[in-house]
Length: 90
Image 1 (cartoon, rainbow, N blue to C red):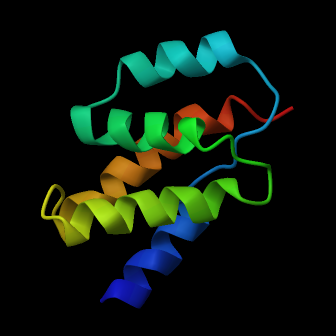
Image 2 (cartoon, one colour):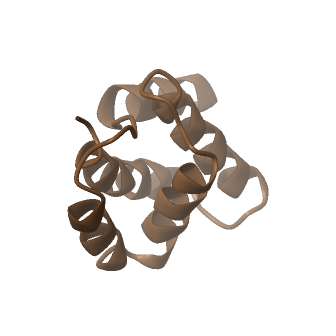
Image 3 (tube, helix red, strand yellow):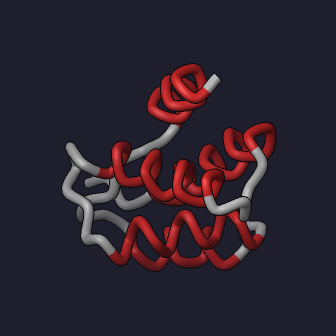
């Protein structure tokens, strides 16, 4: 189950780089609390284009292991955060 979740998240999330930060932040502000946490935690790690996805996965998996996020909600939360992070792509 965890491997499947990782694959799904990797396939559906974006990487953060230099792009439209204002649009990304506006998008991030409208997210659910879990998605917003994933978005902000990913940005706090200053992701490179190649590391953004792995950071989203790590943050999401940590939330699951801490009981802050259910496995069924994880995909939706990570995808929503990924859509906002996508706006950061150059």
